[in-house]
Length: 198
Image 1: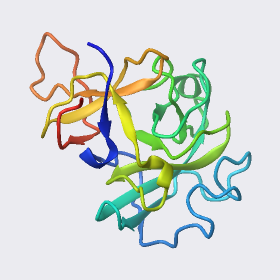
Image 2 (image 1 turned 180 degrees about the horizontal axis):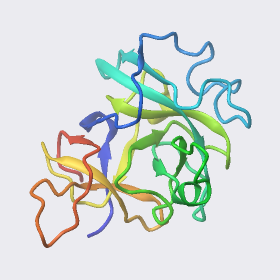
Image 3 (image 1 turned 30 degrees about the vertical axis):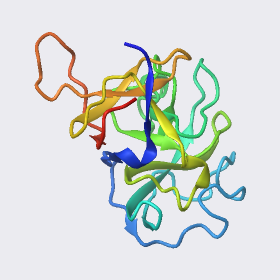
Image 4 (image 1 turned 90 degrees about the vertical axis):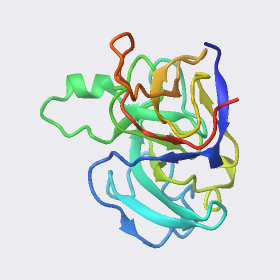
């Protein structure tokens, strides 16, 4: 199936990350993508911290999480790229917490683990904010007023997950196997599509 897209306003993410977001926490002084704390070599906020904010454009709540980006072999993450837990970190750091190291490389992530969406391009091993729940925070991050890549399988009202299915090797949104059919692999639900992808 060919890759497709879906508009940011037509999905709702389900937050599957540990912890409870701080409701109406102050937005960082220079916004979620400010240079003082986003895409930085040393974390400024506690890694894994979640903030829930009201989005005026989407008219709903959005949850954002502070994570560390691991580049993977397919290259840097870009705005609106889905990311998931980096598998190399899980394998090599058995005694160290690696819950919050994420990657957009479809061959190097736990596809059934929690996902988030990049707010901007990010440098390898740097820290920053990602969208992880609710509506897309476009009034807080104007660059997110765009589409997400899908594998062409999303349908209105059905849950989606992520799959290693894009031409550039990055993960894309895919229809979750809600019926648990024996002929197809189950995909963990990450959100709900409000319309079919195009």
